[in-house]
Image (cartoon, rainbow, N blue to C red; front, top):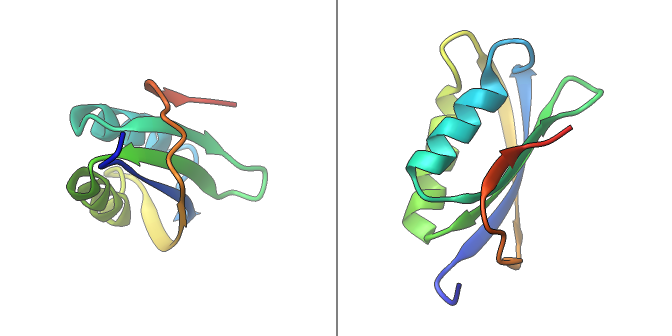
Length: 92
């Protein structure tokens, strides 16, 4: 965990109803990241990623492209201290 970083992100655009959360989960798990992703009532998607800095950066770049049907307009990224999460999940 000493080398881990955490990023809290909000993604806006056409990101709900286009398999964006499952895309995010699959990509995060493939990169060995922990955290979570969920839809927000305002149409955005919120996510937290913890892991190696290079893997988190790769994940953020993948989010900019999004799932095939998504149209990402903006990503807001906030640094936070890692909490030592154990897996990556889709939450409500």
